[in-house]
Length: 379
Image 1 (tube, rainbow, N blue to C red):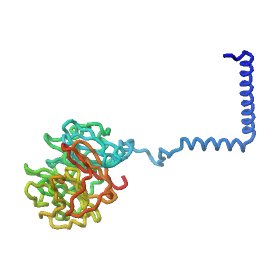
Image 2 (tube, rainbow, N blue to C red; image 1 turned 45 degrees about the horizontal axis):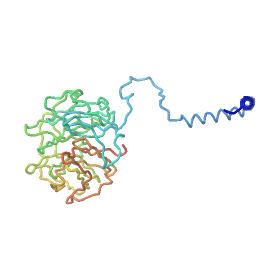
Image 3 (cartoon, rainbow, N blue to C red; image 1 turned 90 degrees about the vertical axis):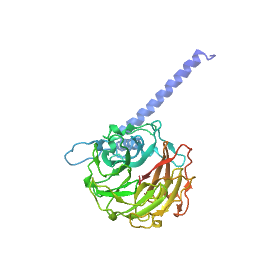
């Protein structure tokens, strides 16, 4: 404030002279560039390299030397791995697999009040999915038709996507890679059936694929190639392994044949394909996990009582779900209340049939493990 007017004038003049000097130097530099083709090319090169560093990425378009074809939904929707979640009350949603990272701490999945997760699996967003109900009907739906949501969303009533019969509940959902092979079915009463995939064209209205007694219901459906080994597992920890060739292919209207002889109050909870050097992952209701090498379970004829895979107790609870996996696989374990846990098979300690499992998840008393979903190697 004490600065005199003359001092302010000199300060302003010095700033203007400084700017003038800078401009003259810049003009000189630019004129030299314009006059020299070599310098001009060097400047252009530097500026293009700077643009490349800032904005360079992979080409997002492809050039085809052919007539354009009709554009489908698959062409405009990116293909990625999705987690598909089904609930007991037939609500469904899909969530990007990238939303699930981590381990024992878990993630929460919102469900409708008093509803619970019944099925969880991983599939491509471009997959065709087969949905099999507990009464033996089969439906098909493209994964891209299922609305994609966040983990916190309740999901969509599957009645809006499929024409389900009254009181029919989805029991199994399977990504369908092709129409080659067989669909292998198992019921809670221990019956099994095999039918050719070409027999199935369920669509959104569904077709009957197995005749069931009133006191029986489907518990598992899986894809096979006609040459594989099948493992049936019960809630009390019994298991039987046999060749699928022992179950001849049947038509859609046929019933099943005996796969395992069940003990008192026991029922089948899982059927899966056993491959060489694979591992059987068993999860109990109270969050215990057990990993058994397939060589521990010898094949026998179908219809027998099987062998003990797990002597469950009050602490572990009954066997809740079973999945056969490779050591390089990862999997998601979900509880009825909507908590999801991410594991790697290789991180689990291998045990014998006689050993008890290890508690990997601590659950409140009003919650139980409900389902297991394999993430295929490399996903």
